[in-house]
Image (cartoon, rainbow, N blue to C red):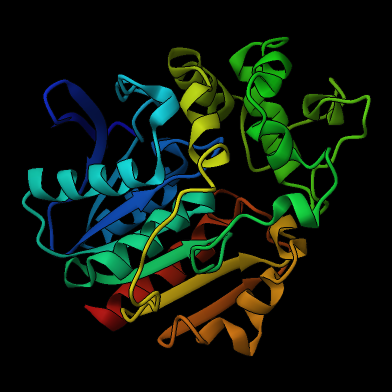
Length: 312
């Protein structure tokens, strides 16, 4: 980890975004994290790519980790992530990059590829296939206790998370999202109550990893993590052509609970996957969960490196 360098990139007049970087060779690869992740969730991939001759860059979204909180957190949206990504590319003098997005980080990776195809050499996503922007239908597909519906409700997650320290919240979410079942609470439960206090961490996630995540979320809190993505799914994008035309790779764990969302398995494994991503490759990792890049880093690193080599 000591090889990874850290800096801050100014966005606008007052916002500083934390950027982690390693490598100085060839093409640049920019990583976009999900939740409860942070730049650190790409540690294995960044080092492997740098060793292979690439420049690996990961940043904390505004209000996450070491990045500054936005002046108006309740107004933060997906568009801000897209704007921040563009600012970072400009600040680092990167005319064209590969994008790698995980979990909800897949959405800005996909949208940026649609909006700025001239800046993208290829896009890799993990855990979430491309879903063309449209109205959120979660309220129709799931019961009230579905975790996204709970976290979308102002104050609900704050009260739930507020019973614990940041480290415990991250631990519980990692445990929940590592399972193959969709996290759904009953009427008298909160989402955090779905994890028993003595439940162990996944074997591939160390106490040191948890301490790192816990410290970063202790600093940032969860306000922006709840705003984007969970309270911003209704944002409208008027895309004249929602097709991703750059080369694309989707990596999914076969045990990922996301595959149980309505329509997702078809978008990940079926013919429908290539309707909006014609240049798509798909790899399913047996026994992989929602955190394949941390669970099976060597396998994921090889898949990403093979894709980069093919399109460099």
